[in-house]
Image (cartoon, rainbow, N blue to C red; front, side, top):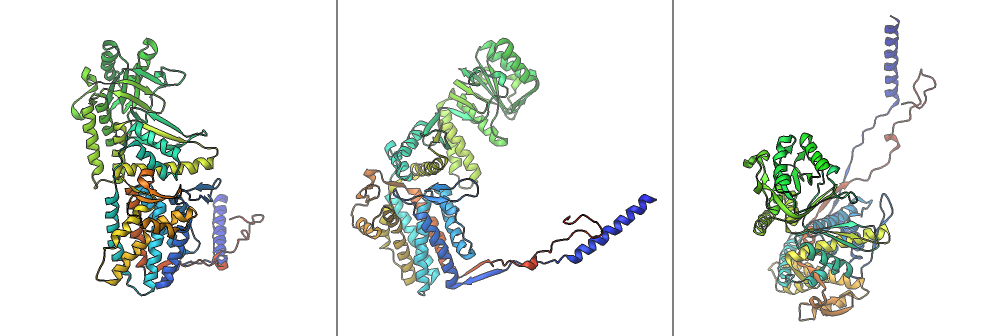
Amino acid sequence: KKTKTNNKKTKKMLNRLGRTTLKNTQLVRNYGGKQILYNQQGREALLKGVTQTAKAVSTTMGPKGRNVIIQQTFGGPKITKDGVTVARSIEFSDAATNEGAQLVRQVASKTNESAGDGTTTASVLTHAILEEGLMKVAAGLNPMDLKRGIDAATKRAIESLQEQSRSITSKDEITQVATISANGDSEIGELISNAMERVGREGVITVEEGNTLENVLNVVEGLKFNRGFISPHFVTDTKTQKIVFEKPLIMICDSKIEHINKIVPALQLAIAKAQRPLLIIAEDVSGEALATLIVNKLRSGAKVCAVKAPSFGDQRKNILQDLAIVTGGHLISEDVGLKIDAIQDDWFGSAEKIIVSKDDTVILNGGGAQESIEERCDQLREHIANKEISDYDREKFQDRLATLSGGVAVIKVGGASDVEVGEKKDRVTDALNATRCAVEEGIVPGGGTALLNATKTLEELTFDNFDKNVGVEIIRRALRKPLMTIANNAGKEGAVIVERVLAQKDPHVGYDAANDVITNLFDKGVVDPTKVVKTALQDSSSVASLMITTEAMIIEEPKKESSSSQAPPQQGMPGLGGMDGMF
């Protein structure tokens, strides 16, 4: 009875405290307002953001461009010459100005995703088109007709770029492209050229941060996948903790192996009959099967090793099929009527050598027929060329093609400090992406010369509509900007350099900013990948022309700090002494 009475008193007290707290608390609901900027006011705010962003990005352009220091939330500042990195780091407190900056960031990011380089050129072109376009709109021209003229001129300029393009045929040209994209660093150009020569143009090349002062190129010849040994008991070299087999047999299976009766037939054929090492690649090897392999290794010295199959689901089966083709064996799968316990001699694959570590497996000189491997590569190329598949699937197909085509190259970027390594890594990544684009679609004269040559073809493009012709003129003027910016960064008068290049009759002659001469750019190796220049022009023209047609902009209203929006601090609970500040 005492307990019930105490419980009732406690409930009453808590209810009274709750009502008192609600009376002392002022509830305020905040509504987020919107602000609308019309006509010239909105366009000027956009232009302000675009101008400031493009100015910061353009300082990095060309062989004599400067670095930009970026404050980071964590750690020390970042120093870079990468245009998209600079654009992504810019934020303005003013919402309207920030919208302009975000649109430049969008252009730079899209160009980076499509071509991997050319983000600075895209940012400079965006600003040039928008600035010219808004001047014409302010003068009373129709923005929709201007946009149609801009679109038509862009299409004609891209056709001109394709006409100027020529394919890459030598290692020296690959070196030149990589060197130019790395802001004139010939060491990086040589590094990327050597990597491509070693692993092939479709091979895997990755860029990592190194721990040395010098840049290092490591190349793994053959086929490599990121799965290591299941048990350390299989190790043959205790010093390096690796398994090395010469001329092994390879069994490839897409199911789990758990029971001893599934593993014994393979051991009898490989170890007892053929007297060769055995590598088992399966979804998993465990239980009695794994114990049997370990016992044979420890007691009789049998050379065996089990490795889990890479990836998951359908992707795993596809990769296992690739492995079977490379090694000249069969994928043992119940889907095609092949069972492990009925294995035969010709189901095994083979290789000259395999190296298995804790994390990965390398198969060197697989025993598969070259014709079968080429046929498989052609199938993968067809899948990659299919525009209906997703980016994720295309990336997986490209990884498989690279694995089948050649080896894997790892470029480890060195430097005296973390800041230097980070800055150099950005340039190596840009140079690698640009080189891949050059191999894919060819090269054009570099340093903004190809875009300047395209202006000559626009002189023939005319319309009956005056405003459309002005749109063409906007693009013609904008295409001068990249070369002008490169010359300005080199300490020269950009407008003068542009006129000197336009006066040349040979379209291959342009301005070499690194040596401050007008010369044949193909001979000097000053070239740009066609895809990079084309993508930069397409993306910048698309976004800038849409900004020109903007008539209203809706943004968040600046938030006003209000003291009434905060609840007054509670002074403790009445009736409970010594509990001030409790919530």
